[in-house]
Image (cartoon, rainbow, N blue to C red; front, side, top):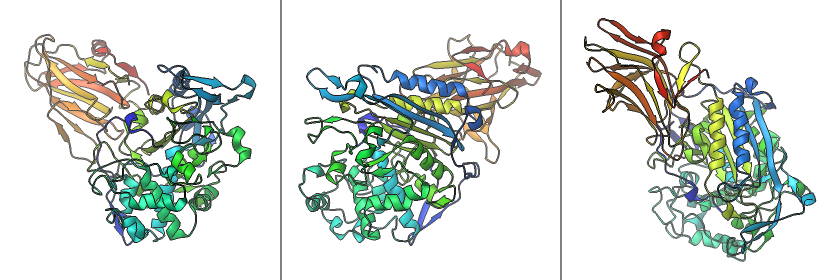
Length: 589
């Protein structure tokens, strides 16, 4: 079962990160902008303090508090029975916390919409090393294996799938490419019940006979069939089954001891239970699924599938995250070249704003990445309640593993716990003031408006100019910061155009007097020509919608100069005390 598209809200994309060129199966990439990301280190992981990770401790504590709230009705039923939370930066895991129960319910009563619990002595609490059915997070492993084969020249990104699987080319699929499988632009519909076909050969036949619902490359449609097809390609070109590829090419080199398909029965007490799977909400009558893959199609394929079926724990996923943030290396093991990792984090879906996608990885998705979402942020979710987010711009990573279909999938909707965790980790990454010790911070509340207003100034002598430092990261278009002014005591406000600049770039004009989206996690110098008036009041106004937020807005070093001198200077205590803030707060991050 795929992660439901109803859980998502449309977002708009940032700038394209890299243009990838595929030359005879080899990878070649155009240069990145100089400021895009720090050179990755070769960190290996260890537990440590928030300070060691370069994180603020209070938001990490809040991350746990917020996650625990979803163990209770949210709003009607718990979002999950339990979860394991892991957050880190650099080589330090600063938070690794289990909450709730790994196994709580033995069944679901659909008549009363209640879970039937195991006796207390048979319930199993979450532990740091609890293993989860990753569901669609499994797609990342399949994608990694595919990019490895591209490095070795056995697979070409722009090659047609039918070149490797001739039977695939039936029913109008002859032009679908490997890239389109990896970016969900093949035209496949989301899902078909392969599990209902009695034999493996008949399951394959259904894929061969499946016709695209849109012409390849013309639309984005998330589909499990893409990664199942990629599995078949990988198995054909390597001569090895997918579970063997996973073990030999990824988990063994990286030392991932709790990551595999089809965990043995001895692991069952350490595995989080999933659903009481029965019709009509499940395609199969299986009872409590615990220690076996939840996804019906993966189960029908023997537990080994390109779209689902991998089991893992939080630490192993953190090692995978660290490997990718390191540029494909962990300790002495290298599983990908740095250029290949960049390719996976490159947005190939520029034609489909809101559906930014690298090779396997989703990019810039606020609907589960929350304030960690940037044009460089990569991740994936799984239907069982799992998620992984990497932010190369801050070298941070977040793992949220929940058993949200325990006891039944209908008890949860949306991705609020993922968003809350990501918001808190984003807030934990400090933003240093541009100068001095304090800067004004908008906060990160949804459905909110924050204002920062200067006192009325006499600009009648002309030539008045506002200067300040500005830092912003907001949900693109949905959350907007506006500079505006009034000459009638606040009855009416008009936008004030301004210019921003940063080192190494040409100045940018903002004729609408507003900014939104991603600014690169750096301070910008702002200049605005102010209207002429005897009593001109100027304010910043930041408004958010009800869904998601970015990291917020910071303003520092406010100063207004005119032909006859300095009219306002935040550095002067008397002037600073006249600033009026609503919803803003000084921050020393």
